[in-house]
Image 1 (cartoon, rainbow, N blue to C red):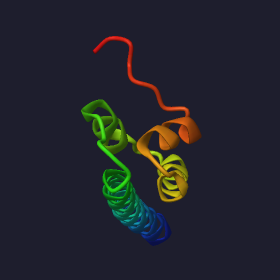
Image 2: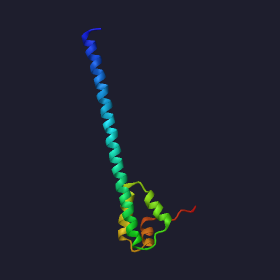
Image 3: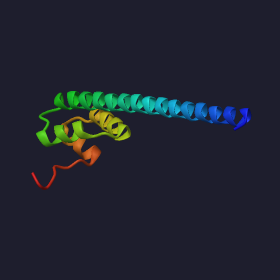
Image 4: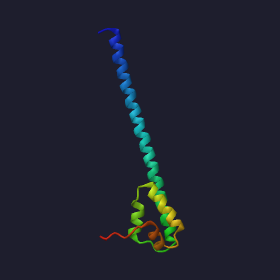
Amino acid sequence: MSIFECNEEEEMRKLREEEQEIGEKRGEIKGLVQGRIEGQTEGLAKSCLFVLENRGTVPEWLKKRIMEETAPDIMEAWMQASVTATSVKDFLEKTGLKEPENK
């Protein structure tokens, strides 16, 4: 084995290690971003419920449905609907949410 082959193998090993480190960093960043989105969505859900509770009695099924929502864009729309709604019934009409058939 020549010195050039040795250096090439060493360089390839270093490259693989660097690629692995980059992959790990990407995974960490992706996890942090996902956690942040989940936290913001949960905060919006809690705020939405706070507003709705000032509009009337919020049924348990609706509380559960709001707290289980994971899509930030949907949660933002619901938050906006809760702020502009005059009652829980009005909120339901604005969002199209309905009580599940199988209670």
